[in-house]
Length: 354
Ligand SMILES: NC(=O)C1=CN([C@@H]2O[C@H](COP(=O)(O)OP(=O)(O)OC[C@H]3O[C@@H](n4cnc5c(N)ncnc54)[C@H](OP(=O)(O)O)[C@@H]3O)[C@@H](O)[C@H]2O)C=CC1
Ligand SMILES: O=C1OC[C@@H](O)[C@H](O)[C@H]1O
Image (spheres, rainbow, N blue to C red):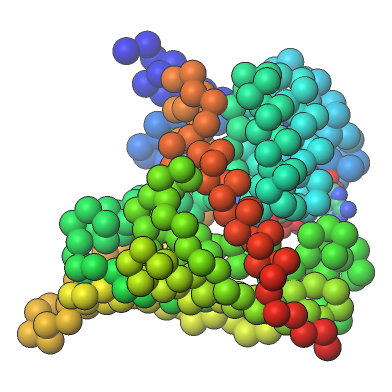
């Protein structure tokens, strides 16, 4: 096998120097024992080059990327293979389209775009240009997630799944945030559903049905949203699968911190509890058989190195080296399915203005 396929290299251009870009870059430069891909931080694009320089000093370790005071310079840099988009949701579509128009591959943060229509536009452009693009739904790429889903759907460790409960709650005090914060400004896509509810919804979809994108069963969706200052501060979703009676109760809120045990999956032969520092980051699950005499089994994530963003980045590197334009774990159709569900929830959810 050619070495580029065995251990591919990707040269990344980073768009935005906020929180998520710091986490992502930190993971790309963290020393790892079992590296399967090499990630080079080739360029940083920021609203100002001073900000870009400060970012590299703080988070970049030994790297010395090109630092640009604009995003356009990153898209135009011939040494950049792939653009990582880490800016507020409302700007994802334009950033993706610009990167694609320069022939760059793209990894774009969640939620991929503000709605399914925007997402479709971006995928159409990527298809036309023949470039790779994926939504950075990192939770799906963690080995513990893959192990859990295999045990539920293939090994049927809890028998037939009946219900999935999942919550993602963070305490976000809107009054203390500037009006320009991405967590507060409706124009930037603020709201619990798009920011954190997307994870609860993801766990529900993955736990209740093995299919994704075109192979997934279609649930009926019921929802309620509490609106404050023009954004949803809490969204609750019920997924009901008429095909088999399964139900998901999937919640998100900006009012309360969720419990470390953020999800419960119930089946005919037992229950699984999933825990982590956040609903996006599972670090352990426990299988509790219904038979009280049988032992609980605990499964832990691999020892912690970085935050775990390299799992999705490695997957992207392998895909690109193999000539694929989309990823099998997070294909374009799956991003569009989740976006369409969130569109429906926002359109139909019972809303209460305070
Ligand atoms: N996968 C995950 O776990 C996480 C994903 N995310 C996702 O990443 C994206 C960015 O979130 P996060 O890093 O928390 O956001 P931050 O507010 O921390 O940073 C966003 C960055 O985007 C740039 N930017 C461009 N225009 C604006 C604007 N009008 N207002 C604010 N920032 C702007 C700025 O970078 P500059 O000035 O350098 O151009 C800014 O630093 C979101 O879509 C979010 O959903 C966020 C956190 C965790
Ligand atoms: O994706 C996310 O996960 C962690 C949260 O802190 C953040 O707001 C969100 O964007």
